[in-house]
Every structure is written in C-alpha cells, then in structure tokens.
Length: 416
Image 1 (cartoon, rainbow, N blue to C red):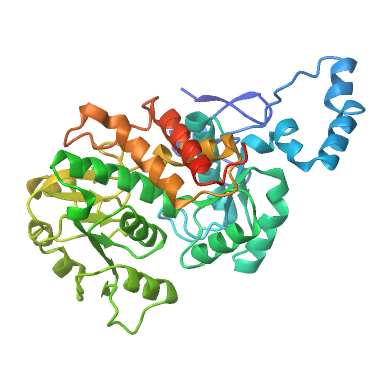
Image 2 (cartoon, rainbow, N blue to C red):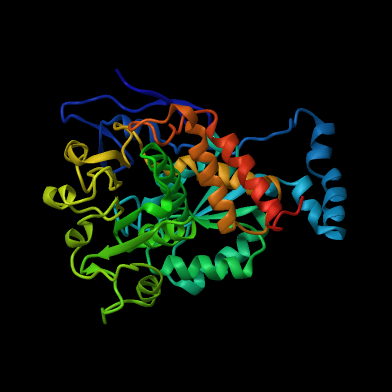
C-alpha cells in the first residue's frame, strides 16, 4: 500500500509511490529512490510556516499588512526593544550549519544537511515550544560564516550552531558570542555536555558518591569531548583525561592543536599519558563521543561501580552487553537501550528559558542549572536503568526552562 503524506508546503496529499518491478519508487525526476518509510516521511520536508493570525477579509489584511503594519514598524524604529513584543523574534532560533560534521556522516555539504536541520527545528517546537528556522550555509570559511550569521541575527532571538566541524566550531561560537547580544549555543558541544552531567550526577548519587570522587576518561577530543571535559570540571568532577586517536591529551605531547594544548592544561591532573586503554585502568567513568571500539579488557580494568557512557551512534564504543558485565551504570546514545544521552533533553528547554527572559547569552551557570534540573526530574525513581529521563517525559522541558530562566536572572544576563 502506498504511503499517504501531507506536503507541508502546499498542504496537498500525495503518495510515497508504490513498489514496481524494480522494487523502488520514483523519486525526483531522473533518479530513483528506495521505498523506505524514512523517504516517505521526509518527502516535501518536515516543517512549514504557519500564520498565527487570520487574514479573512480586508480588515484583517489592513491590520496584518498595510497600512496597520506601518504603526508597528514606526514604534519599533523609535524603541528597538519592542521588536521582541511585536514580531516573532522573541521565540525563534536560527539553526545554522555548514554541513561539515553531520550526524556521524561527516562533511556532506549544506544541501544534504538540511534534513537534519529540519529535524532539529521540529524538535525545538515539539519539546520546547520554540520556533526554529534551518539555515544551511554554502561556505566553510570561518569569517564568512560569522559575518553571515551576524547579518541575519536581527531576525532571530537566538542562534543554535549545528554540525560544524572542530576546531572551527570553537572559534565560530566564541566570536559570535562576542559580536551578538542574543544567545549563541553550539549544541554538539554544550547540549551533549549538559545531558552527560545530568546523568553522571544521578549515577554518582545512585552509588553514594559525588562528582568530586570520580575520575573520568573521555574518548574523543572533538567538539563534544572538549566541551564535556571542561563542563564536568566546572561542575566539580575530580579529574578527567581526554584521549584522541594518538592517546591521552597530555602536556608532554608536541603534536597538539591550540584547542588541545588548552585542554591539556585544564585536564589530566593525574599526569596520565599513553593509550586510552591504559588510562581506563582504575577509572570510575568512561565517556565515549568518538566512535571506535574499546576492548573488553580495558573496560574490565576500570574501578568497581564504574559508569560506562558509550554514546557513539549507531555503534557504541562499548556494547551494552559487555559494559553491563563490569559497570554499575551504562548509558548510550541509542533510544533502544536505557539511559539515552540525547541532546533533545537539553537544547529546547535551554533556549526556551533563555528566550523567556530575553537573555543576552547562555552562561555556564545556566547550563549547570539545566543539568541539575534534568537530573532532578528523575527524583526518587532513580535506578541503574534510569539515571536520565526520557525525551518524552513531559516534565523535562518545563523543568529545564524554569531553571535556565532563573539562572539567567541570577547571573544578570536576563532583560525581563
């Protein structure tokens, strides 16, 4: 039976096509696409613009457009902050990418990244009530990306950077934060870090420990690995070592990028060097954000009551069946295992809270507040298979939103 879907742009109904003798269904002209429910769902895109006011007659038209709109424009020109009250700016985020580091697919370019950016936008709406617009840029030049986003910024209340490769993503985020007075947030870094901290807090609580009691090893020194390491230390983690493809990032290495040199100064108080596997001996926590595979003997060498957060998708660095042999708590990036470390638990509520108070930026304190609120949702239901709530738990977004808004006010970056 052919799949019936709604084209979000036209509202017209069509079919996903039917299987023919070739076992495929016609895609765009001159090409064939496999018959797959994913293609059916994505046909025509996953989102559309919808009016929030009616335009039924000439009176509605005169208010929504000319001449009534001129009064609002003039008021904003005289008092620019009114743009938050009389346009969509106060509740809309730009989801910006250059398509260089997409979903484990790598550098696939701006057009191919659009399905992911649309997906991000609908998650903003579904889980945080925040409108979002996908913007895929046809440039990978750092200066061009920054200048383009700065020029687009008047239309948006915040900027979510997405799937931009490291180390460029660090500079792009930093410089945009310096030039703009709206929140700029690279979710690959900070969203992952927030959810990881929340799960780690609860795992520590489950085993009668604090963050300060724990030594962690992170596999991956890209955007997520660097951000998680810094964030966990900011939150009070005892120690953390980060490993890249060449081993532990340490001060004695002479092949480090500027980002990794800074990381070496901040992390690895134990002075470890050598391989990831050797660093895991006696470690309390493994956090994987790199892909690859960690040998079972290395997992077995970790401390008693250890935590394994193997978040590579679709193949975790440590298979859960192996991790459960040795670890007290196991988390992955997958939805078919307990304890999914999923950024959707963080970014919708973080932006909703920041936009609610018209924050000028997202601070470390706001991110820590988000992690604490997320951990708090679990409450007394805490167990080895439940250290982090489900993305579909309706308590999540309100809790994170309220905590982030309160933290923004406490840190003096709120404007309402």
